[in-house]
Length: 259
Image (cartoon, rainbow, N blue to C red):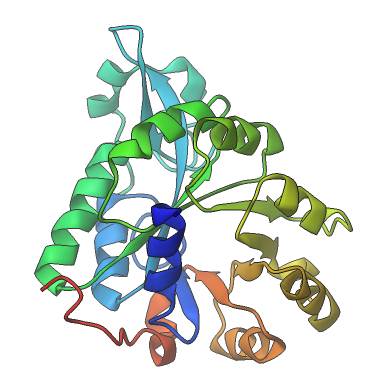
């Protein structure tokens, strides 16, 4: 039995429509920060999405940090390539809320703590954003038991590396342009979902993906009207910077799940 897949499916079964906090709650606090993730948890998002890159440690092992871009320029007080920094550099690299760029381990600890405080279950969508993150993420999340987790990426190479090391954790390839082969790619990865840009989604494509047995999650949806349109189309979930606008779908039906 695939326990990780069963855990993920059981968690989502409590939500008629799935609202995923994009980079936490990116419109309400600086993206991919602990403050943003905390807000998304408190608003009731069943899944929190984040992006990982790897950085070097002095011990010559690598660590996963949570940041979207390949460079530090847009979201921190520093400039330069993320791939050129090392773990000891992080304390002086500050996000727009004045905090350090978080480690994935710190985000996981925050989610675990929020689950206890809120007496609920909160899932995690880890996007493999940087190079060479597939294998590292697979090794890292072996210890994640309480948090339902799905891994996604635009990078097929990273998803394949992850799947080679982890046969069980749910996967979802990401597409910003429509590809007729998207379901074949999903089947090759033994994926559970196809994640698509809102710009390429239509009723015909959603039907095709779902007929092949995949869930459909769409990014990035910040309009309540657009969210309703997509859900009526058959989409299973949306990524949003504004989970505060999506309260209609944020009621969790099993608040005793941690008791």
